[in-house]
Amino acid sequence: MLIVRILPLSLALFVLGCGNTRSSLSPSAVSGAYEFVITSNVTGGITLVETSISASGNQMSASGPDQVQILTLEKKTWYLNGVCAGSTPGQNSISASLNGNNVDVTFNEGGYRLPAQGVIIGTQITGNYSIVGSNCPDLTGSPSSVPPIPPGVDQGGFVGSEVPSLAGTFSGSLTLPDGTDNAALTLTENSDHSLIVAATLTGAVDNGSFTFTGSAVGNILFVTGTVNQRPLSLFGYFDRAGTYTGFPNSLLIFNYGTPSNAGLLLGQ
Image (cartoon, rainbow, N blue to C red):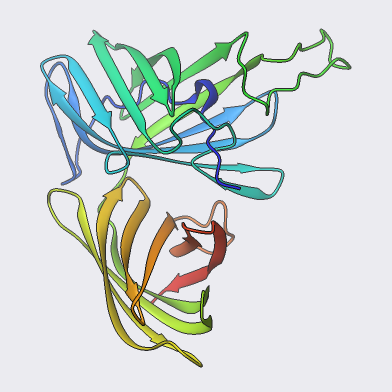
């Protein structure tokens, strides 16, 4: 089931930028690639908001699947696009404005408009969020909590950090439509965040080299191509520290069309 979550999560996604070739800092705004880790105190879910921000003056914005991607981990289950589906899943956008160190953000995730605030601390954006009256089915409430949490309520915190370009070769096993293959994926990100993935597959049916193209959005790759004349869309999350996969420098791959977990590849 392909659903979307971001509850009030994306908050203030973008402010600083220093020291990374994927972003540039001005006195009023930033642009580049960022990951925002949003933790819900109600559901315990962790939502990763990946974005490529553009800046104009003290305004920042990003829109569409080439600029905003979302992945949620909740109760040991991954949800592409999050755990709450808007009316247009995967069609996300962000707008933000700066006032000194403070950031006001509106995140529109698949139809959900989520206003929030954050603050710049050193080279990070941190803050908290709260929402009431949400129709997200994931927010069922917690009557046993003290005080009780009614349905449609969520609150938590977030930390946003810039991320470097996606690059490198990753190998392991992938379960694809024609079976399980030994796979090696080599990632090359361009300055405009477009992404080329050169794939070498060895399996009962899939044998050869295949090229996928698409975008790098923060730590997420979103690419399409063909394998044995079948279209295939891959969605991958690069876990640099191994925080979520348990393996540093690993690439968690999903078959976006199914959607399903295709496998975990390790950096070489």
